Image (cartoon, rainbow, N blue to C red):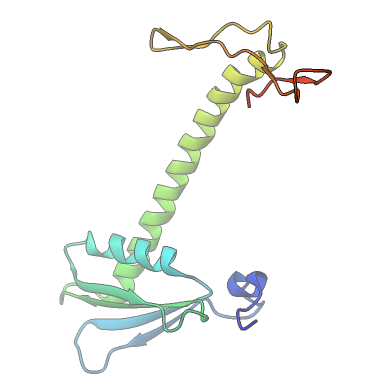
Length: 159
């Protein structure tokens, strides 16, 4: 098979650089950033964040080849700022946003676990039906999976 191992696709060997910056010699305030061992996810997120900045005139990305996991991002800015500064700002903003999402996720996960764990400590028969916004959910009866109705085992199919 021609595809590289999944481990090799995103693992950056020690001593390798993650990004290579090449200033554009033909267009003023433009540069190309090659990010190694990344895919469309990072390319699109960084491009989207760059386009939110008013100092960015152009931001686009491409993947050179489907089997190469490198992202090439091209950025052009106004005369007031440099492309390197805008990419650094976009990356720092993304790190802040991901940190916020992680914090909120962990808080909600803690709340969800606090609600679920007491229910799991009771048997399925002892649990009260769940009420969601004032609507009582129907109770589920165990499903008899016996074949032909003789000598089968009743199985609770409530996953």
